[in-house]
Image (tube, rainbow, N blue to C red):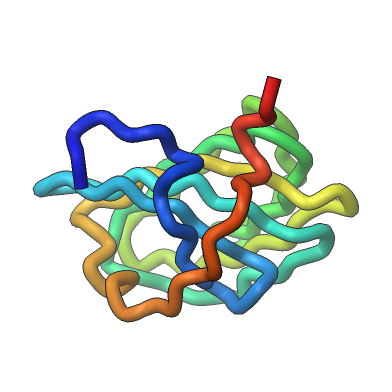
Length: 125
């Protein structure tokens, strides 16, 4: 991957089927993912070794992190330490979020890719 790229040109990964897709830019020690969630999309409870930091950019998402639950809109953030259980549900209009993972999400390399298509975000203007 080039060092400078528009996120809309990055192929989407089907993280949780057709309802949760991520466009990922990976470095040597961290991954940045723009994640697009369909309305009501469910990210079931899971845990991973990666520390995860994120922010909602558009729409809303309800996160549960180690039993703490909160609905977040644009500007809402989360911090998920390594191996902490967490889940999420997108709001009625879906959500666009940015996640940063460290170390790199190499486990996502095996995920299926979506057919090329337009990203939900950023909006064409």
